[in-house]
Image 1 (tube, rainbow, N blue to C red):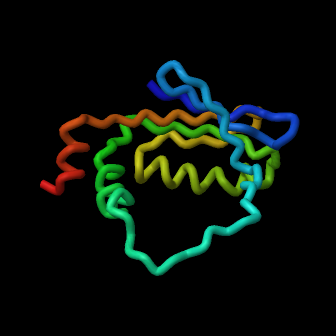
Image 2 (image 1 turned 180 degrees about the vertical axis):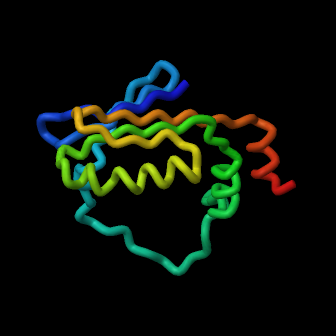
Image 3 (image 1 turned 135 degrees about the horizontal axis):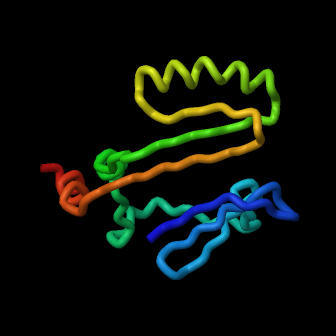
Length: 129
């Protein structure tokens, strides 16, 4: 349903390619947002009824309903000193958390994140049962 990948770009350093169902999107996270020159005049009127926002607590509870099924990370920073400093940290995390975290010296970068959720868990967290 969803696939995200980081790709190099000529104008920017990188871009994020999102595939959602059958639609393709490109996101440029390092690009500056354009601000409009004319600012809207604020009035002291009350909020409109149509301006309903979801509270942060509900969004956080829905995000907590996701379960991480599998997580693997295999990185190479390009600097052998940095890789050597990361190696004992990753070994410690592998021992206590059971994830597959690795440091290589071959130029490979890999991340695998498998996330699962069920509709009933999302509904429960949203309606606060």
